[in-house]
Length: 279
Image 1 (cartoon, rainbow, N blue to C red):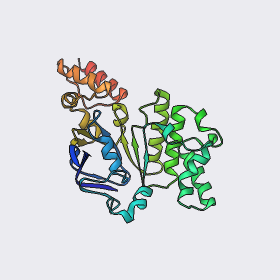
Image 2: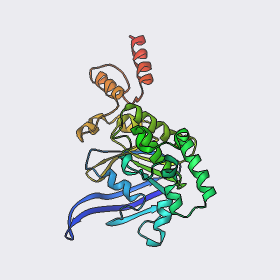
Image 3: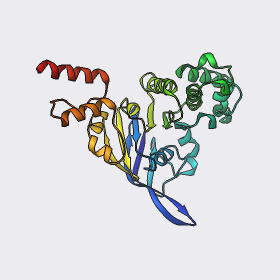
Image 4: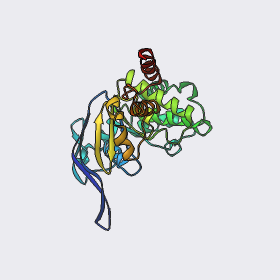
């Protein structure tokens, strides 16, 4: 779906490079994968996300979307059509006064026929669980509902992949839960490729794969259990791990024979029960 080869990107001022925000990034994201990207502020994760649909173009190296080079200007719209983007603040992405009109905005601008737009809007709203709000005013919705409408707007483009850049950063716990349920639905029911940029460990733990970035480079790239078992390394670069993982890590340090590659409360309870039964 997405491939980067020796990707580099530097911010410049008066043609003088300031710093490399991305340095020699080599990644492959497969069709249907749910990938979470973690890292502290300024590590390059949002810059990387913006390369996935051609918002940013490489300073060095290449980015390919379904085999299309993002630097090829003739493929600009095709790349954008296949990789939808959702940002942090939903208020910055809503452009209409009625929910269904907002979701229809992108396909209308692409010249999609009216009957097809109606079908796409309804399907997108059903996918994110917001169909009943189709005639509501977006500004009257909660933060989580607004973000789901923003996701529906991206889905109406019929992308093969959706990139979400910290979509829950400005939401309360209820809003975060609503958005994550929509993301899981995209992965499981729509078989869509999902790239989630986040700083919430519990969100990343739900992904198929976790990429950890530090200072513009990929530090770790593996399944969540293996990534979060690197507690010491993650803490060294200023990241946390899921609470249950940290609890078991501390118990293991204290001498208890427990695993610390556990991510859920249920698994943690089972592990502790097993240790207590052996005692």
